[in-house]
Amino acid sequence: MKFKDKYRFVRKNMKKNRTRVVMTIAASTIGCAFLIMLASIGFAFHKSAVDDVMGRRLMNQIEIQGNNGPLKDKNVEELRSINGVKAVTKKQFSDSSIFKYKDYTASTSVMSADMKAEKKAGLELSAGRMPKSKYEILAGYQFAKSFIKELPENAYEGLTEEESAQKAEENRLKLKSMAGKKVIHEFPVFKDGKENGVEKVELTIVGVLKKPSKEWVEDGTVFISEELLKDIKAKGNPEGQQEPFYEVHVYTHSAEDVKAVTEKIEEKGYMTYSVVKDLKELNVIFIIFKAGLIFIGAIAVLIASIGIFNTMTMAVTERSQDIGIMKAIGANPKTIKKIFLLESGYIGIWGAALGTLLAYAVSNLVNFGLPVAIEQFSGEKVPENFIFSYIPWTLTAIAVGICMSVTLISGWRPAAKATQVDVLKALRRDI
Image (cartoon, rainbow, N blue to C red; front, top):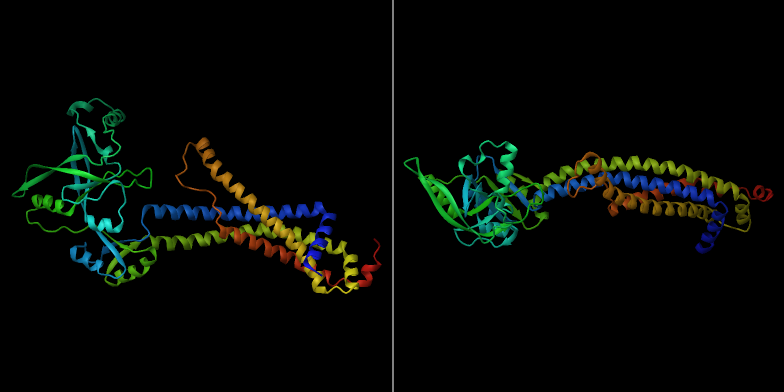
């Protein structure tokens, strides 16, 4: 018996009991959709958590700490010699420093950086270029917001905290970018261990750092060259001793190299941290979470399988005479079993397909409508890029696989029963 003939036989018999078949497919559809939607919550939380981690750190970045105190130049050179290391950046933080632009003043944090190493590591700019001389600097994306117009000392007298903040905001520099602007950097100088005035140096902002990935983060940091920091420290620290680096990062050529390079660094006695470690722990937690949701969702599919089992059992009972005729003309028991499994599989395919489409539709509706509803009723805004439902192709494949497996298993027993129908008894039945 050809497959086309089997399919035609199945279609003909299913049309006789259309209502029962449609209801069975509907139950299978709801079960599959419930499985996908429930598991999609776990996948969405996993994706949001991973995106949040990756948004804050580079995948090929390794943070370094020394076991025997802060790191220095010799440690940086040792790290650079490790095979697989693309670049090593080092930063020193300074106290909050004063910068002036026209009649505006800003107090912001300053750090020195090895500009060549930063460029090699892939430091991204939103405007301008990397510094080439001692008196060229980089500014954070929101550095302009740090500048407030200089007002008389009594300008804020008698104002409440809220009024003072509003006045300060009104007098804030309105420039969007400081690229290409010249600023005056003021820092105290010392003599005989005592402060002896203030020195000023003119600096040019040649580049502006990339906008932070988080909207609520404001980057007003200034990056100066190591040469300039040495000049400043020499005047504030006559001994000229090198201060330790408070931030050292190793960058590999790719994310795949992070694990191997990390092992080599730890062998040399350094403590390390990378986003790969975070993701490893995060993945284990969410795999357990997603597996639990899939297991719960699979229960709905099992409930739907009861309907499939009932439909197929009724089909065998109702078609016992047809089965008897097929056996009488020499039909192989395997052929009869395949016909009923084909019918069961047909129901499963429709249920899985419609369930998947329904799940995607509900997922899009939830991701679009739920944030609006939450903001409308609670006044709270959902974090940017946060999603409530995410359906990757792997989840679809798992759900369809479970649905089809349960469907075929549900139809297996009735199909096996069909092969055991007695020919004489079946032919003696009244029509």
